[in-house]
Amino acid sequence: MKIFSSEQLYEADTITIENQNSTSEALVERAGTQVFNWLHQRLRGAQAPIRVFCGIGNNGGDGLVVGRLLIAHGYNVTIYIVNCSDKRSKNFLLNYDKIKNITKNWPHLMKGETDFPAINPDDIIVDAIFGIGLNRCPDGWVKKLIQHINVSKTFKLAIDIPSGLFPNSAVKDKEAILKANYTLTFQTPKLAFFLPETAPYISNFDILDIGLDRTFLNTTEALAQLISKIEAQRFYQAREKFGHKGTYGHTLIVAGSYGKIGAAVLSATAAFRIGAGMVTSFTPKCGYTILQTAIPEAMVITDPQEEFISAISIDFKPSAIAVGMGIGKNPATVEALKNLFKTQNVPFVIDADALNSISEDKEVLTLLPKHSILTPHPGELKRLIGEWQDDYEKLEKTKEFSKKHEVVVVIKGAYSIIVYGEKLYINTSGNPGMATAGSGDALSGVIVGLLSQGYDPLLASVFGVYMHGSAGDIALSKMGYEAIMAGDIIDNLAGAYLELFASEEEGVENSSEKK
Image 1 (cartoon, helix red, strand yellow):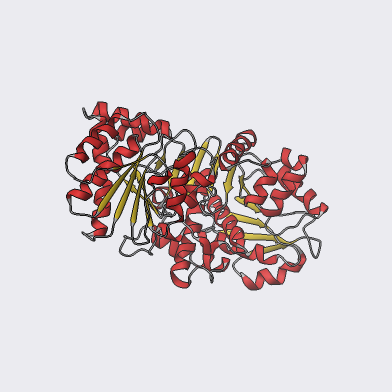
Image 2: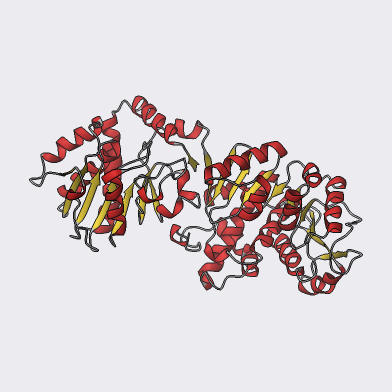
């Protein structure tokens, strides 16, 4: 699924109206009806007080349609007009006239703080004050109204986007954004729904199809691509009937130092579980017995040094290499990393201490192999690209880094984002239980295992992040958030493959609430 900017969505509205020989009013009616249907299916006539707050633009028009339909179906509805300007959209005015004709209790016109209603915990709030067209932060009494709604204990439903939140630009005033319990967004989700600074205002969301022009949606280059099960199914590369271990590649895992051999074990195991034909781990001498015992399927080559990696020497040509997990930053290890980059012309996954070496040593950065996959957590990313003011600047800086060095960057987080040049891919699988030591080592193993099987770097990154998150979701269904360990994610990669093509009835339960 694509994620579009507000400008692109307005263009989609215009093209839809032209191609469907329709009107803007009809499109607003369609959108408001979809919101009403969502509410009606869940409320089933329940008489909880519903308070609909409408702005005076098109989002307010949507809210008036919702209010009118709720009233027509016998619900207990009060409508408030947030009269914050003397400019009113045509769609607002048309729907304001319609609603006056069906209710004796005309919409309450709000002009200041004295018009704020008392809100009870059992009320339902429908937020239709501002939509995706907002271009400045709410201020004055309107900001106070949003704060008044926020402090209430009631359920808050936002139409398209919570009021005060910009769909594809940074938060400027955290106190002027409505905190929705649920958001019903039209046609496609917005980029703000997936970024650490803005996603908390959305909580949960559903996407309502309002019939925007399919040709435009399919052919227009979007801000980002959302990766879910449907997309992941397309990425999967089926096995050959007469394939053998050599067909699926020989992965090299360069990982571990004294006290951190577990990173090598996790990465090697994950590479096998995702389907690599062979795996060799290069590690300090102290890791030999651990690796041979923990994962007998793997081959092990040891460094001359007992406790750290100093000189990486192998006698085979790997299909792909993952490096950095638990290797530390001993000067000899950094030199070994430089030599590895110079001598091995294969796909790389670069993680953990290898990333820190790149950010601290300019020579390592100049040797960074093109088309490598970098998998930083937020701290490592900051060391690579520098400080950022907000999530949008973070994305722009990551794009610049990706383009300059011709690499894929996986920004790990609640919604991991894969950056390749100007392209963004946002992952939807995974859950907070995966915030545990070793989860990143497992991800590196997953991605390098896919590289070894012949997936190209971008596909290995996008598909690997999805499968890693899916395995975490399966682990969640068995043990809850707190009990998940990195090994549990790896153990459930087999289930992630089965889940990939399972029907909804067969599959593991999954919902946005786990985010």
